[in-house]
Image 1 (cartoon, rainbow, N blue to C red):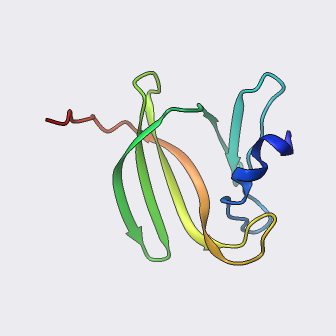
Image 2 (cartoon, one colour):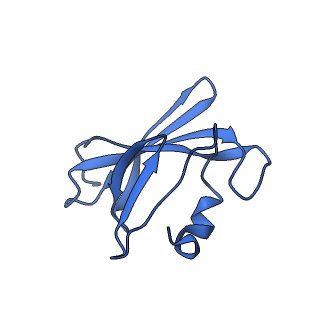
Image 3 (cartoon, rainbow, N blue to C red):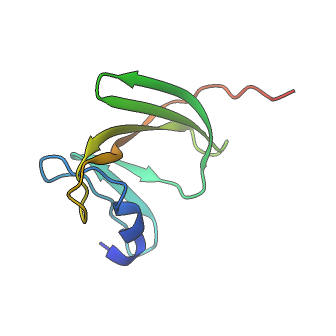
Length: 107
């Protein structure tokens, strides 16, 4: 893991039960994982917020992605400590790929 590359981003990642991290391969591609579930992160692919839901102690944010990405990203936020900061703050608990929501053109 290249700690320097994701050091700043890790401040926003929730650490629950010792898990929650990003990894990066030697070619610069990011295969990210949360709690044993991995996915390919594509830089600069997140566009507009499409859906916002509050579920008990979590917030789900679904973002539209660029056309080349076949699914949208959903960020699950919760109050938790971080890797370098034990204070409970709103942090990303999980990122998943979800069915792409058709983008409506703005008029």
